[in-house]
Picture 1 (cartoon, rainbow, N blue to C red):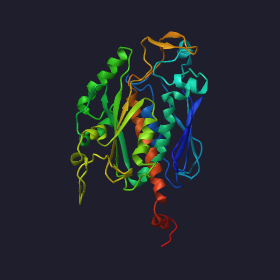
Picture 2 (cartoon, helix red, strand yellow; picture 1 turned 90 degrees about the vertical axis):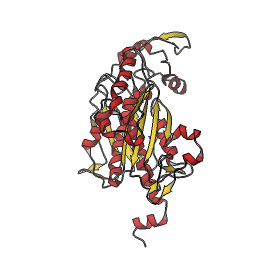
Picture 3 (cartoon, helix red, strand yellow; picture 1 turned 135 degrees about the horizontal axis):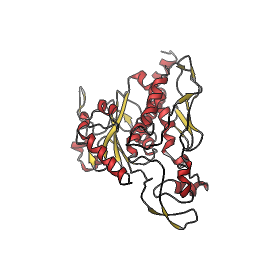
Picture 4 (tube, one colour; picture 1 turned 120 degrees about the horizontal axis):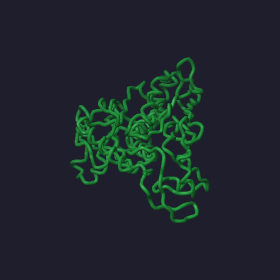
Length: 363
């Protein structure tokens, strides 16, 4: 499927080496101030080729808003955003046009559709994420009307991980860090891990930490559209993501209930093992998430593979690829979480009769 969301919904289109990528956003209420500068700023964060820690493919990624905005405000009609590709190097893929890259989705796409788009991975490429970041930026224009804050950053690269407590992670530092690092003292070590992988023609995985603050109580639709399940669905749909943890996550399976339970006082919860969600519904506490990215599958070491005729071959990849996809992936985590929250916010409007009566001014 190429669409995401129920009420706040977007559809992406385009391929890595096609003419352009973009999205169409539906469900955005009319009257929201449209912030072009913010939209471009978010695209700039995930833009390739900015430093030695990402792919060297250079794209301007300038957003063109085609519809849905009038005199600086949303109109309530579909918002179409287009981003042109300008720096494709399709020739880099000629030598593997019939060869499957190990751990890359070109194998499954070929067997599903019977078509081999070898140029940059086509629709399976992380290049498609530019559309998600654009849609997420628009979603945040709605969320900030309600003071909802959402941030992400790098917690670990490979086996090197910050030991800071969640409350001590530095999102302000992450904003100025080349790799969006949440731990100032650990940044040199994390950078070194990325460069070691790049210099050895390899890649490395990473872990992203996200926090959502000022979330109202009540977002989430039990039983089958729980907020945590929607979050997991959104994040697991990102290229290279292999695991998602909410709150204490995996460690909660090793706890006793007396330690895992979040006691409640008159001032709020005394801990946040639940990660801000109970029964699939936001409880008013901060929502905290860890997203785990595998190493980028496109590496520059010779590997065993097969071709489209199922013959054994050697695969040697050329081109430009991220040594650690988690770095730019952190920007995408933020975007997808914004989309989940915007959709949940609008879905909640019809959850109670008194909410509906307020809209239509009935007592």
